[in-house]
Length: 364
Ligand code: NAD
Ligand code: GLY
Image (tube, rainbow, N blue to C red; front, side, top):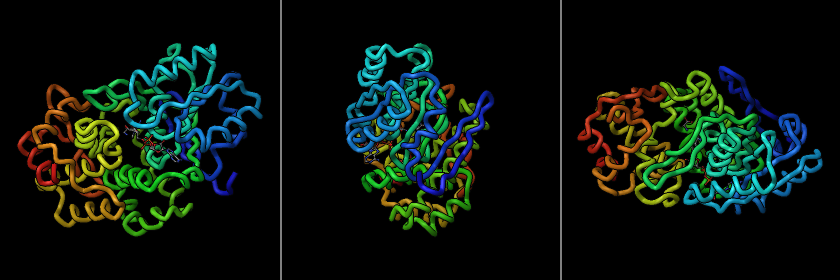
C-alpha cells in the first residue's frame, strides 16, 4: 500500500462505514478481508475496467481464501437498465450466492449504482463494498448509499437507499482514467464548494491545474474533502428529507440533458456542469448571486474543461423532462439554487417562466 492513507467516516444513525483513500488501497487484503463476512464474493465490473484491474483484485481475494465469481457488464450509461441489472442477478444465482455473499463494485458510478441496487434487492439485501475507479465515483456516487438504474423517462428513477460496508477510493487507478472522465468528475467536486464549502471553492480556484495534472496529493486532497462534505450531509439526512437534496445542485437541469439527448451522449458530470450554470443563472435572476460570483463559477467550470452552455433542446423540452424529477413534490419543482458561493438553498417558488428564462440564457 502507498504511504499516506486518508480516512473519512460516514456516521449514520444505525451504523457507520469508512471511505479509505490512497494509492493501492483497492488491492489491500488487510483492508478487504475483515469486511467480508462469508466465503463467497461476486465482483461486478465492466468490460473496460475488467482488463485493467479485475485480475489484480481477484488475486488479492483468492489469496485471502474467498470463493470468487466475476461479472463484467457492458460499459456505458446506456446499460444502466433492467436488462443489464439482470446479468448481476444471473451471476448471483448461477454461483448459488447466499445471504452472506458479498458484492464488490469495481468501476465508475454506473457499476457502483447498479451493484448497490442488486445488493439491496438480492435475497432482500446482501453486503456490498464499493471500489470506485473514476474521480466522479470516488468523490460522490460511491458514498452515501444511493443506488439506482435509469428508466427511459427519467434518470435513476428505480432504486434504493442501501449503504456499502466499505469504500476503497484508490488514487492509483485514476492514472488510466480518460481526461474527459476526470473533468466530468470535477463537476461534482466543484459542487461541494458551491453548496457548502466556500474555502474549498477558493482552494480549487487556486489549485485546479494541479488536479488536472493529476498530482497525487492534490487528487487525494480533493477526494478527501469532497467525501467529508458528502459524509456530513448524508449523516445529517440519509434519506433526503431535506439538506441532502442540496447535493443535487444542477442535477435537475442536467438530468434533463442526459435523458433528452439519450443516456451517454453527454457524460453525467458534463450535464451537471451545464445544469449548475443554469441554476446559478436562475439564482442571479432572483437577485441572490452577484454577476461577479456568476462569472467566478462559469470561469471555474470553463477552466475544468466543462460545458457552461446547455444542450439546445428548447426550454419547453427541458421543463417537460424536469417535471419527472424526483424533487417534484405536489407538482412543484424544488430546485437547488445558490444564495451565494458556499450557500445552497432548496427553492420551490420559481415560476416556469423564470426557469425557462435561465435555461434560454444558458444556451438551452
Ligand atoms: P461511468 O461509471 O460510466 O464511468 C466512466 C467511464 O470510465 C466508463 O467508460 C468506465 O468504464 C471508465 N472507467 C472507469 N474507471 C476507469 C479507470 N480507472 N480507467 C479507465 N477507465 C475507467 O461514469 P461515472 O462518471 O463514474 O458515474 C456516472 C454515474 O454515476 C451516473 O449514472 C450517475 O447517475 C451516477 N451518480 C450516482 C450518484 C449517487 O449518489 N449514487 C452520484 C453521482 C452520480
Ligand atoms: N449525488 C446526490 C446524493 O448522493 O444525494
